Length: 385
Image 1 (cartoon, one colour):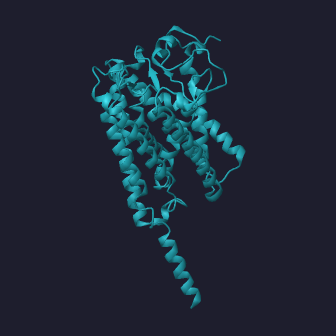
Image 2 (spheres, helix red, strand yellow):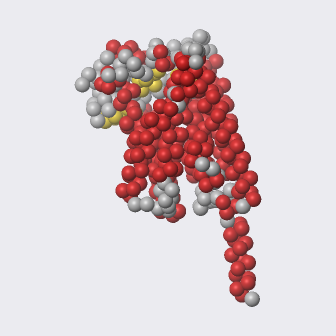
């Protein structure tokens, strides 16, 4: 099958040693020889984060008979493997004219699939989805509200975490967007609104929604977990597609498709933000009234907190390194010719990530189990009388 196209050659011209005919399976490169120092750093953070998330998911299943975390982690990775080939090789799927080559990744330490798919991208979606899921899970929102509300909350938390570094990636050449495609307009910085809808909102919403609907039983066998993960990975496609619906409706109403994408994306973001604010507030008030509404094991679980702290510290360091060239940029390009992202949106999502993480832990540290403890103590005293 043809892996070399003129469009790939054009887009990869400013990337470091990226080939169109790399090894089908896996290619390794020294992390010290990558194009800039941020690349092995983000690679290490996300790959290590994916491993840590898997360990946390397995432990939660064993200790608390909750398999949903493991389903989220597995389906996050499987979904990437199902979706990415279409983005890298649209000509294989007859989508070269309708979709086009949207993105080309730079060369990282470990690459798969003709060197198009970096290992850290495989790790990225499980990490962001899992950490967002755990943050929402610990609040009690999944028990108090519908699966749709829970999925919207996870999608918004994911969106905030993801956009902190997504907004700086292009400046450090982690990847290159194809700015000439019709689907690339309009964009937030260089991030197309189409991709914001699909991957920064639709994907986590779909993964969470189907997981919550399938994982109502407590502890299930390994085959059931695998089946649920496959079902989640497959069903996220049509649900993601629904996120493009509002833009299409606006387009059919008489506005251009570009206007539709712009309005629809912000409507989705704002709607998810409002739902998240209401649900977080309601869940907080509920657990202050009755600490026993919280899921088991969250009082002493600081996993998501540490994940967010490490991630935001690394993101802040990367953005700090990007600032000099960002501020010297002319017409959206640094002196070296690299495109820049959106610093204002990075600051907003950074702040929101801090707020959401704080809100997820508020009222869960010492309150959980207090009433149960009091009841047990009362029962013991009565039994001793």
